[in-house]
Length: 245
Ligand SMILES: [Zn+2]
Image (tube, rainbow, N blue to C red; front, top):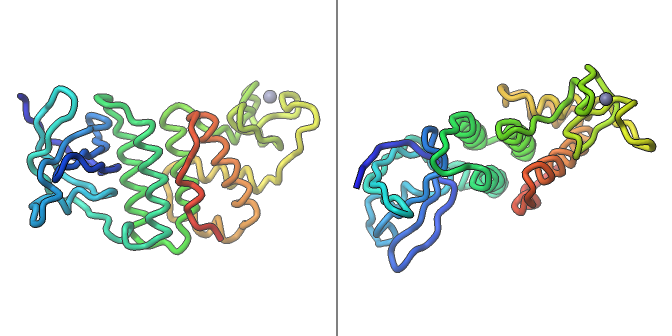
């Protein structure tokens, strides 16, 4: 069987038999990898501790019919600080759960890998309020998989904005002609916050965004959750566990 080398970020692990684990990883070149790590739950296992959720690793694997087999693991970044803090770990679970749901096996998705790596690095740096990073992560992930939240044009007729109405189903801001009658206008700050969360790039500006406009951020966060659950067609089960101010 063919062996290969790749990088990956551990999304989740499951116990298998007495001493093994099944590991889901996201790789930049192969998308989601599902692999078996044999004997890693034995005391003194050489690489069991390197295969914890959120770790970025360099791997050697054998291709299998259903599951590949991990034969070597080196740590690139353990992101241990994420696992040691409740709020950061809760935030990281939302990230990996969502990636595990959208990543496809055998489909290269470097943008998704880079987003997850950036999200975990940001959490590992120890932010006091991780929730805003979850919101940014979710909108950026939605954008990568084809659902970018419109904030500078009408999501229906594409007329350029800013517009005062916001729709989950339509996919972003709506102009007065496209908004259904009776739709209530939102505070322009909310749309600015959604735009910054979805924009990609800078993570460093996000904590001050949340601090300076707490009400707008709260509304933008509810919108984000509804937007992502609707367009990815799944409940974000771990979202409620993330502490919010
Ligand atoms: Zn319109």
